[in-house]
Amino acid sequence: MAEYDLAEMWKDIRRLEAEADALHVKAQELNKQSRFEEAVHKYREYRRCDDDAIEAALRVASIMQRQNNGQLESQLGASQIQSAVSHDKASNLVNINTLPGGNCTPGANDCPYKAQFPKFPGCSYREKLRVRRRCIGAILGAVVGDAAATSVQWVYDPEKLKRLEKQQLDRHGHPGLDFMDPPANEHFEYEVGRNSPYGEQALVLLEVLAKDGCLDTFSYAQRFADHFGGDWHVRCNGYRDASCKGFLRRWALGKRPPHTGAQDKQINCITRLPAIIAAFGGTSLAELYKHVEQVTLVTQGLDEAVAWACLGSTILNYIVTHGKHPRSAVLEALNDVHTKAVLFCNYLDRSQESLADSMYLVAGHLYRVCWWSRSADVRTTIAEMGRNCHTPNSYQTPVHAVLHHLRDEIDLESPVSTHTEETKEEIKMNFIIHKCQDIFKTCIRAAMREGGCCASRCGVIGALLGGYFAGVIDDAIGPALHTSDFLAEEDTFETLLESDELVLKFIPEKWRAKTLAFDDAMKWARAILNERM
Image 1 (tube, helix red, strand yellow):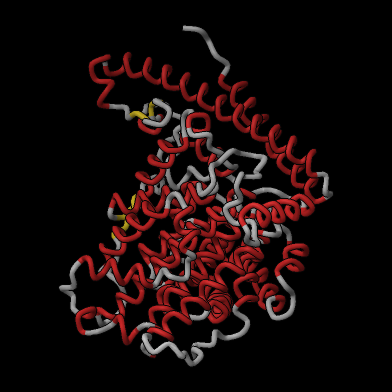
Image 2 (image 1 turned 90 degrees about the vertical axis):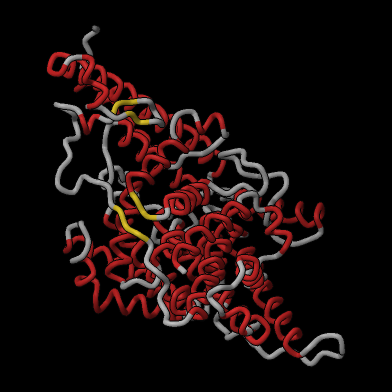
């Protein structure tokens, strides 16, 4: 067997990772300097370097596999090897955590985290249905919002965006950049209606939760590796971002949850939240934070990523579980951090003092958003705060867009109709649906128009508005929907599906039809939510 210098190979991985990080920073700087073409080329260099780091990690893992197999042969005999090793489907590597002398000896906390879905909060079946529908609104709002912007994801040049919007208007007769056809993204070639890399990763979590019927972080990590590992980026023409590649390197080298997360704090920690809230929303914040932390650590290992995810989950939980207006949800979440952050961090597996500091830090960034939402528009705010994928701006800007477009209360009083065929309830229902749909489109188009990491921005907007608007529509059509037939726990499955569909009317029909993952996302969302009824 050829001798390999593993120490040098490890150094090579670290060198490639450092080079990739430096190229990533340089590409961001070029975008900020409006040197957009140079930035595109620099991003391509960054991706090639990051891919080289993954290949180097796979080579190291392969050598370690062979070395460990040799150790086992001498200790156990060849016939017993299979019972001592487990294989990683994504890369066909041995899990070196299980091997004598392996590089990743499991510690007390190096084990999968498992949690069953709790039943919905609320005493009555009606209360549970309301939470269910707001969950569906948040999930599908996020999926559609993200898909609508994928075609112009990471276009930073404002002049190019103006030309594209004019082209869209000339070709299709409507304003906005939604579902831009042909796509204008220069970093990947996704068909119209496909979700962005952020949306695709969130869908994997949604699918895993739906099919497992519980949260199992090892299962999630395994399925994430199966989905995005190997030649997926070639076979599916897919894009793997920094946290995805960092996870794949650590997974290939034998790391297992909660130690698989990359040194990353980008917006991925927020975009996966609708699925987590669907599975665990309504539990105590201490319990919710435990689930959010463990999911986050699978792919992102920094305290700030966990802190952003915890704060974002608190806001979405208030909207979905408690039916709060987004502004109230943000303010109450900030108050929770101010008064209870240290207490909540006692329940988590991180350094309590460090994570509490991170919670205070991220909360401070959102106070600024609340002030700006009253006066500054979306364009001004994104120009000031930033438009890339990194926190804080990648969460500040979508929250600002939502609060800005909801700064005035929605008028629920419908105009008087002269159409005698419509009942008063039908007039009101149609008016509210139209109002919600108009704000949904306007807010997402405004955020998309500013470019940069606009798909994740629009996905977050879709989740916040979707959870809220599903509740508004649910309340507005109450007299028609919530008859005694709809309140019985023995409702037919068809009746339940019908009520789910009604509260999604805030999504434009054309947008829904163009979103390729819509039906799968609806199926997986219902599977999770049915477990909680």
